[in-house]
Length: 189
Image (tube, rainbow, N blue to C red; front, side, top):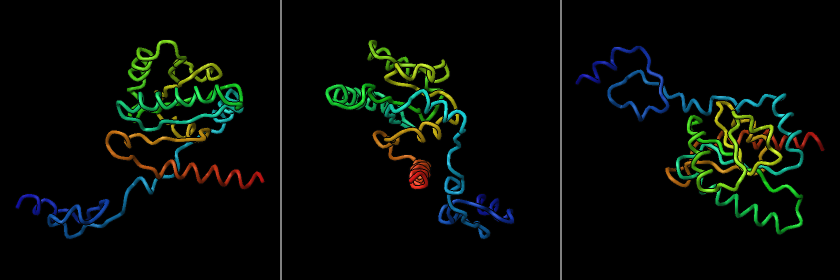
C-alpha cells in the first residue's frame, strides 16, 4: 500500500496521538496537542495599563473566538444585560462587549452586520481607534491579531465561541488567563 510505504520511509513521525497514524507508521511518537505546549496568550503590559485606565471600573465581557452567527447572539445577550444594568443601582456605565471573531479578518464584516441590525448602538473596530472610544461604546469588535490575551485579561466574563454553532473551541487559553488573574488577586491581598 502506498501510504504504508511512504510512512515507512520516515525515521520518526511526531503526532498528536498515535491512534491517528495506525497506517503503518512504526516510528510514530505521540507528543500531545501543541496548544497545551504553548504558553498563555500574550498580554502587553503597556497596552493593558492603557486599556484599564480608559475603562476605569467599567465591566467588560468578551465573546472570544466567535463563529458567524454567534456575534448576533452575543449582542442580544449584551443588549439584555445593558437594559438590566440601567434598571439597577450598579455603576453608571453599562458593560462593554468585546467581540473577538475566530478569524480577525471577519471583524469589519461583523461590525457592518451589527450596525445594520442595530443602527442606534455605538459600535467600533479596534483598528479604527475604537480603544480611544471605550467610554462611549456598547461594543468593540476586535480585528487585530494577538488581541485576545489583552481583552480576556480585562474581562470579568468570557464566552467561548463555537459553542453555539460548531462545538466548543479550546478553553485552555481562557483557563490559563483566569488562573493568572486569580493568582494576581491573591498576591494583592
